[in-house]
View 1 (cartoon, one colour):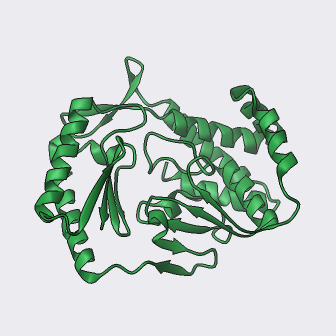
View 2 (cartoon, rainbow, N blue to C red):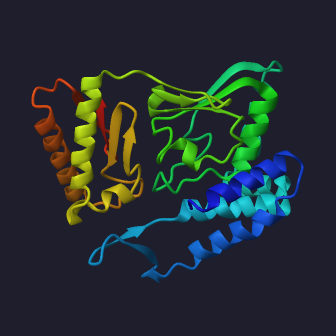
Length: 287
């Protein structure tokens, strides 16, 4: 999926400039074919976590979005709309409702979350690469209906963050990661919210301990599911479950208990960290 990022970016740029995306179509088709041909065991795809352990994974989202990209680039927008309408019976009605209520004026600033606008939920964050058709549509909207368009997300900005899995042109959006504590403007300017030195040192030490923990055989699977292991700016997130309930409840709860104890060992008085558990992600935040 990582290899589709530059291919999709090139296809988006070509399409927005009015050129053909033909050179990229065959590469996207190859990626789709590789995913479709992965060996299955009792109908499921297994991911080898280490030499002795495997886990079942769901790659439906990745395959479907590649399929939609191929429909868009080979058969056009109308056929893609028909694909949407087939999957969502109310699609045309909802689209008409939205268009009727769109104001004529340009938005001075338009801000959206990533989930639901750029991507639907995927079983893994790092493989939820933005679809090329979506990037084309959003870039057109940003260029014609806004002066400033921003995508805000709780994920990191880069190094495994939103910038790495987005394929829209760099000048289309400002990306704000880590719930807005770090950003990259559409002109390339970067900024971040300052963190006191002592707090950053504490977070660095905790992240190093988490790195060591997640290398142990019992915990190898957790960086590979859902949000994975995300070192955000001023916060760390570790997945303990994904959207399909891959991890047995007891194992997920035991992992939460282990992480809670580890955080407590680094911060016995709760001075530096607080934990929020979403049921899928363990969010460790600076106070």
